[in-house]
Image (cartoon, rainbow, N blue to C red):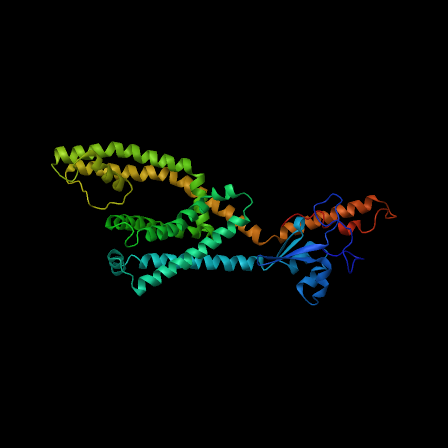
Length: 381
């Protein structure tokens, strides 16, 4: 969109972007932190000593990126303070997630739970409700903004993180409706008891707010990508554990119940729990084999659990490292588009020089073609 030589006031009919004999647009879109304003190209000259006025003098990609943060030639849109606004928005969102987590912890205190069971509402309980309302309002506003910007609403709703947002936000509004429906005089004590159970179950879903941190954390996004890529490895790990559990649970039940006369291992299904915590080397200590045969079975289950879990873990670790490197590289490319643009600019300049050399020493051809060659070849940043 830079002005070309010989066009000091109004843009001429030179091709701006998209290629193919179009006419240069006489209006541009200035995007400042998400606020889009459509201005006439000549109106930029009314801002002397400003970045908008310097935008008219740019003739290449490097000069343009020194004035604005990013640009889209296909839509004639220039972005200012784009990364700063995105970082501020992410910081605010993370702060609301942290406040929500703190409010969730405070709402489980014994005195507040006792007030809820009695149907009372102290100033502390009321303040927590106001705090939760403000946080949910922010999350709802953020969700609506992202849904409005999405091109395909169906694809947007199918995204895992957006599904988590819906499941985390909806319980608040459902709890409000349930609370209004179960207010005193609306149906008796039974309805109040059912409403209290529903509210407690819905409030437990508020823990999903923590999953929103994955939008702003490279490590959490890498973890999610690793889980998707290693679905087969996780399936093998689960298969190994199930087979080993089916083997060691009956053995320890036989060794302890029949030979050791212990009551801890009352049945084979009860022994499955012991096999899980033993093979994963957790060892809660609630069920302990006392007899010598039972201890031999326990040692075998622990050693086999270590070996079985070590097989797929190596592949999962390498997949996580590769996923983290890929996402970090994408993040760096998105934050620093200058090298790619310089390469495109060099390629465009080389193509223009080739066209000029093919015209012969007389320089036959339309004037200004070598200058215009920069912009038609520029793609969206």
